[in-house]
Image (cartoon, rainbow, N blue to C red; front, top):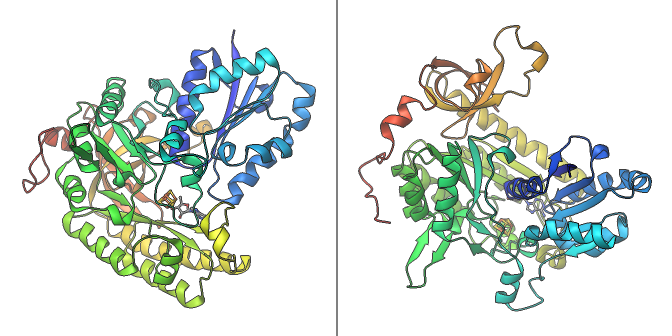
Length: 489
Ligand code: 5AD
Ligand code: SF4
């Protein structure tokens, strides 16, 4: 029977990937995606708990569906992902019309839970064990890995895909809810990851982005004591024919080891792009955040990245207004951003998360207007740095994977000149250029002619290569520099 599914996803790449996999499993049950929740038989929200704002948006969406559920009680409404794991009771109280609550470690059970709701008419809740509720092993087991077969039609496009390297996080930064809601860090077997990437390549995927909360902490121990790290994984995946670009996010500064940087430098398919959140430029704040490094360590790490990976682009995350952040500590963060030369930074106002150490130990003592001002001030500094960094690309030729029409492109205006396309370089810079929609999914050589703080503007140099630019084709399988030997895998 044909049924209609509406799904909204908020949060990180991990959620985007989870939604893709959930949609894949539901498509196999005969569900078809619709854009309007009111047309749907099943409405799912894949949720994020990192900041209060993300949760508020979901409660507000659920609130607007209350009347709809009264009128059409057969509609199934589900909350899945991090909020479901963290607040199952609260969701039941605040939105009693919700039928399905399913944490990120239980997503494989969704088809079975839906069948049970239809059979019994009663709500179903499936969450994993809390980290303090049982032994590490038991908690790990309760977060089931979810790796169904990939289906290209589930992704926004067929030529790019996320691939999970690990679940969960073990860092326990004091402000962060992720280790509680996504559970202990569990790394997937390298061969399982390889098989998935091969399958994606067979389906026409050209770029994979490896995702993990701290992807560079990846460590898989084989039964015989051998260990694979992220660098080993990169060498392994580099040989997959059809894959032309490999990215990985997000990195933890302490785990940015030389072997990883050498792999990035040596493997031409690996993007010279590192997202390494600093969070603060002040040692006292970093200590209260339990980030396990000092700002001096972070600056040295940046230097090491740039020394070992020539031309690398680095981006960061910052939290402003964390507990006890004074004007002086904020100034240190401003100094770091002014000097570090980040390509871009994501800046967030601290949002206390019940259940985290910071919420338990420290008062949320920076007023909201101060947080807002610091956010704006830091953004203004980063924008100046980004503009300078972006302008340094003018006149250079870069390789761009065209992702599709830019947001500005209006389908109505097709036929009135070339549409505006958007794509990304090897260093993750966004490039806007004019060209036909048929260039989507192709690697092109593009000359940068202008730049803003957010975007490079380019003109294509050659567009007659098939799907891969000569630049990638020529270097396929070779190392970028002969300094680094390829390990035997
Ligand atoms: N408040 C604000 N920002 C947060 N982040 C994580 N937890 C919080 C919080 N409680 C930010 C960090 C992280 C990014 C994904 O979200 O900067 O790197
Ligand atoms: Fe959260 Fe820290 Fe883990 Fe990142 S490393 S997910 S900020 S606990």
